[in-house]
Image: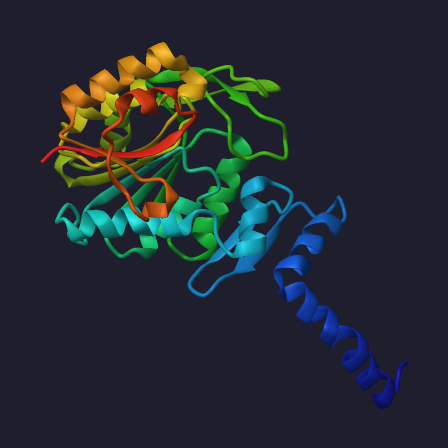
Length: 290
């Protein structure tokens, strides 16, 4: 059994320097790569919430190294909508394609919504999502739903990427998908009806559903009208330029405001070059009507 002096020296010479190293970005990067295979999840305590992640996954590595996954962007969109009078600190936000729950947590932390409904289809992601809600005791504020958002209710095949990538799962059979699972499919109308939410109480939609955005945006428009702000990834790389131009035509016909929200909201503004938009691999867009 080590004596007091030996314990002190071990702590001063070895433990404290190691702790300091692993608190830094480089140390966390080393730590994420050096974890043994039987460590499949870690919990990160941030300033205002806890989150459990897979440290080998893209999202998990970002949380481990930087403390978040796109929080600045989420906050930037919500702050913009609040500033222009679209959000008033109440109502419901829909997080469609919630992954492990990062954006659902960040939406809750903006204090602009009474409730967040987080919908995620991939089984492993959903388990992380549900865990992260309960880690923070936010079961009353965030409702997880295990389903794919689709244009009709039923079941559907969800195509999954490799095991260490939590994002990229899609209803489209995209390059890099390795297998598929059958999951419950729900329309946005069914989701709000199931949760007993009046359509007028839905104030914002954050959508990340990997290439199926056009179909779901049309369903959102039919369910809530074009007043509702919707943030989504516009992805010609998934749907091709011809379909992208059809999507753009729909946006221009149905929404008075089409904003480029790349760069975490810094310098965001109205899209003016729609020809360039059709050819971009991916762009973060926010749409709504006055």
